[in-house]
Image 1 (tube, rainbow, N blue to C red):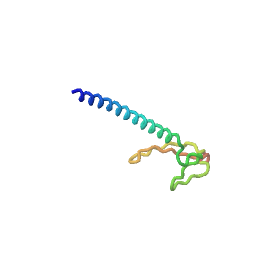
Image 2: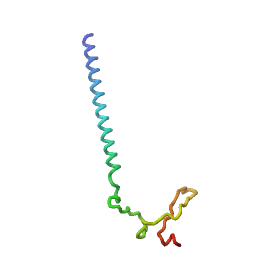
Image 3: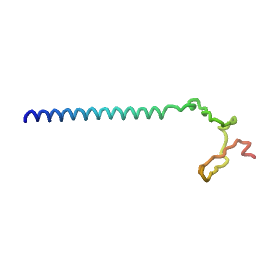
Image 4: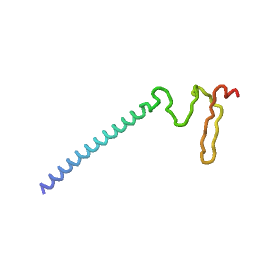
Length: 95
């Protein structure tokens, strides 16, 4: 019986060591994931580093479109069900 007790106590010690190692691995993995999230969140997106808009296929932007003001808001019903902003430059607002 004395040998069985040694095995049980050594198994318990081994079990504690494994739990400690697993906890350490989990903490490191969580820290790495958090760091990757922070880096991904703070890194500038493609096309935004220099303040220029990313190109949109098929879209035509007139010079000075960033200075346009809000004219109205349109609510599209039906399958679209979205809100759209109507923007215009000074000429459009005067018209």
